Image (cartoon, rainbow, N blue to C red; front, side, top):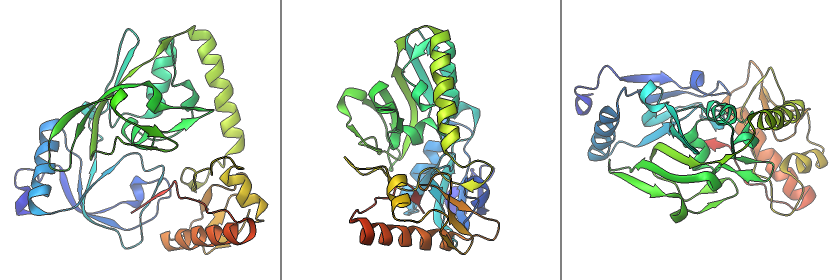
Length: 293
């Protein structure tokens, strides 16, 4: 690891990635880094850029499937406290890219700031949520973004203004390598009423999703102007369908359950089978929301 001289204390080789994802599947990362400061993160990115080493950011692993053979190059996890801070100032909520989305939601609600409460129960980090414009109940996080501090793949730091970015369904133009910090401008509201709305949304979400199993977030995006992906998979008669240890959830068909003997290849084969069957039976092409490494 000569190109990582001085970073040995924050970089590990052949780190198993299964423990870092909700599926708990997949092989190791060639290099796995948990930098402790922004300076270490910048040094790491610049070294990888100079050496031609590919680099990926890992959030909470809630919407990720790692292939059984693992991942070449560098995987970076922003787990240190400096990347997970959340601050409030008036109507502004500023959160580190590694901070948990759920913590940002509850922090804003308790302060009487509205906007993020519809995201309750959605796992992941602020960085991942902004990258994929996480949303629910007709709203999404991108609409509240005022500005973001990002780091590019070659190690340059920039400010991105929210009104200069585009956000769509489960995607955004905020596609820099690292979202270091984000500032959202929210709306003042009654904390008690906000908490009640959040609780109702939490109950509805948990009633419809599988619990107590190894599974990631929704596998497919909802097609525009049609039934949801889960409804289409259900209409195709695929609830409970199994390949190896991977099973389509009986509770919500847009979730795949990984049973103890499951492999990442089982999940990949089941995904392709679902897409093929929905295309053949309902003439709809499902687009993946799950990220695959």
